[in-house]
Image (cartoon, rainbow, N blue to C red; front, side, top):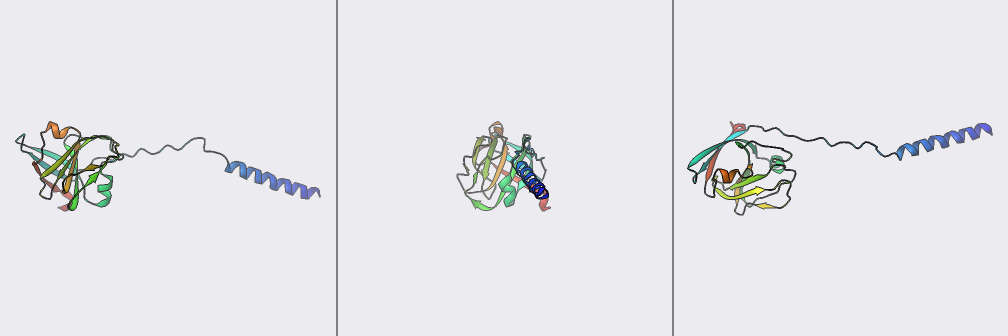
Length: 168
């Protein structure tokens, strides 16, 4: 009888320890890893500003597939004024963007299939989930630092050319 009581006591003790360990809350929460992305020079873009009568050169990253277009400049903390991201879509169509997980204020420059600027959305706010519309069908969107389109006098009707190092 005493041996049986010791066995039952041992089972209860193991059960109590198991339940106690399952109920423990993680005292030190895990810190989320900070995601950073370095600029990848994938091409060059020359913007012809007719108002300023000047061409501007940019080093560009290219977003030409669904994943790249969906992530864009998310999680970036900064970008140089002579850099930008060019989104390339298969054809002209109405486009909508938002600033989810985008920490840099941006100007979004929408262009048609001839790379002529049809709309500029200036000073898009970081992390804003509001929809940013192309207004007119567009095939390209060129993202640059907020305010740059004003400083360089970029206007509707200006155009650009670009090369894509990945296609050479």
